[in-house]
Length: 640
Image 1 (cartoon, one colour):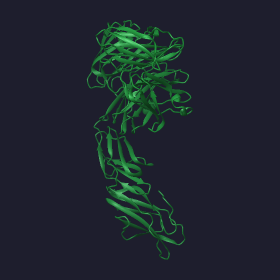
Image 2: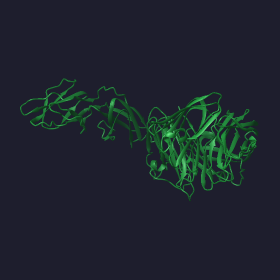
Image 3: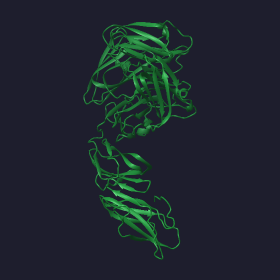
């Protein structure tokens, strides 16, 4: 029973209590309830009903009860008020008035429905803050209802799951405002997609679990909905053959819904109900989103957090993939997936620094299938020089990642560098040398034309460190910068900044690896950045006594930049905001608690970061444990 006020003296307060009974569509049985009058001498109550406010038909004497069910109400507005009478026939004034609106205009918006084969989201607004639920079913008698959302709001999103593909569903909405007024919407309908894999505005994909038989490795993901509409996310696990293989043979793709501005960070066991550890099978996860602007990344880690690696989620398969890192000290595993309906024929070339091909092999990846192989498996019997790289071309677009493993730990995950033909300027947004740390830059020529690279190591304050480095770059060749001697400087103390890399006429791409000279600390890699933007998102925050989040913001342009950094919680609420100026060619690199001292001591293990500027920037994030046992560097992602 929903009670508003007590029925005091001669005036009663009437409350609506609704039940889920109705003999036919829009023939509703509505139970009304009220707080009983506490005065002695009460004989009963009269219920007044009308189709206009304040104008009622002859009253119904309901007796000395505190509830009454009105049956078979039809479409339209129905108003109710109550009077009390005593044993002498004296009658009180009217109670408060409440109404029930059945299929009547109420100022609410028409619901927007998004569907997949086995799920739907229904989004609408109400004129007044209201508590809501949805009745739904394959016919107009419905038969199903969502849980009651008792938190009043004017904006509502409800998810329906477990639906049947290719089926028309009817639904209606019940809303109760703070005054006790009940609104029952019109009947609406939608049809689910013919198959479980319904139309998607965005498809993301990533390798599910990569590990060794003797060590458990797990996969987690962070996702942010940057769209203005709710994102219905359907997770589909895929085996190497392309068949759905998910943990425990999941019959239906698990569903998650992110409202606009919301973020989620989950481990695969939370999605599929189990964790596959120590698997070397090339499993993938496909995420189909009803909203186009969803960003995220995945991480691979072990149970002891001795290793941590990851990459941004792939949204766009490519027909040309380049992986800069091939090292005899690390095992390189290539993960490829063909999301299309046609088999992909791929050519894999192992390329030397001078652009010549050491070895070349061809493979076929069936439609919807994947391939996982180490460089040694692909090029059996071919010795791969440390500074060579891997080039893959395909007649069908592919998703692709390169995993680097050293000392039985995954140390790095790389996607195709976000540059290539036409890109003549790159930035290594973090370059550190000295003490135990070193940085290794790889730059690849995407064109056949020989070129010359010019590299400048810049301090955070925009001053150049050492001299300008030049290096010959053969056509389709590679330059590997393993130490700062090219800059005519060898720091004894730790010195860091960024490196600007320019080519004369060729398109270039590459990556940087940050590692410990002694190998006692983890290594991480980062693509060389090319596209400068004014709006970025970092899809996750980890900051507490165990973890840190660092942010590096680079302004390589010629103009002063005004930069705003916001930390948001998982619901999209602003936790902290910092606006600051960043001079031309300057960089700021700090952990989150340096930027926001008010966050010191706070436990933040969800949420995300948004960075906006009036000048184009390069941005990346660094995640890790405070003892530096693990590190993960990721480029910030473009935001609308």
